[in-house]
Length: 49
Length: 325
Image (cartoon, rainbow over all chains, first blue to last red; front, side):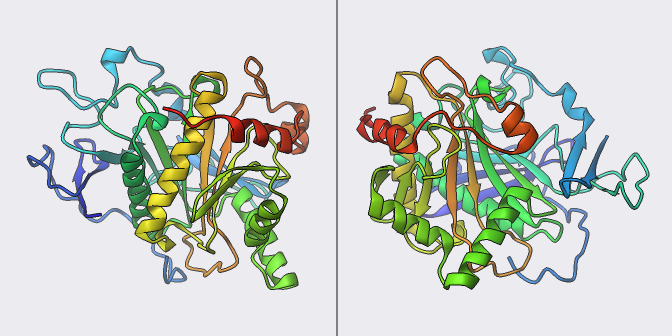
């Protein structure tokens, strides 16, 4: 199954991710500002998921 | 205001999130904030209609990527920490009506793919130790928006129930060399009285130790720890067995059965947790067609569930309920 996803940033800064399967979206959804790096609390001990 | 407060007696975190008091509560159907924004209409949470599934961060989150500092000062006894994490809403589609039961197996399979992707993406965040995927369905469970959706909480700690399961699985493996949940599957298959349905890859049963009358658990036969461990074929099988369990629930009494559906999988804290085993648990609140099971004094105050029914009898009821459309 081929998955296409696109993450946008909403006006208030929240992230939103659209998903499509086995097809491309017919148009680029509005609000397509690319997410910037979210603030993270770095923790050295996490090595993998 | 949002923060984590340590409960020193139960040794677990409590999330305070006072802003959630203002969250949307059963808006009229034509003002659903989860429907796609229509041209000339009021702005909703989802700007586009052209999508199959969508996940977005909750407007009233209990946990935030960039949480504020705690509003109160902690102490050695009363520890506090910022409520770091992510709370997402996962819409099953643009359509306002219906439930997960009404989705096709293809659509549920796509949901399983999105669950997997969210687990991987959120679990990779440094401050996330556990990705908890769940659905609250029905007003009896406290749902405030009807549009079919689930939720994802990415916690900065391993939640206490999962932590107890991990501990039990670890001890069982040390004592026997076996996975506890693999042994539970073998015991349920051998007995057979509590089986609800099964396919090549998954088994659904009401466990011997069920706390709710119609508490169905779905487990992969193969020892898989989390969603990314599944093959595409297994993801399809999971969608198929989910569809059957959901149909059985709704056909049991002829109405859409409310439930909590929770996914338990390995934490994303960087440890292996090889002794754990993915599973889905359903907790429907009904004990008969008309009567709800409440979490009352014994359950809430002592942590002791009293199940007024026998898992063997309830499983037989569900087994004999046709999964018809």
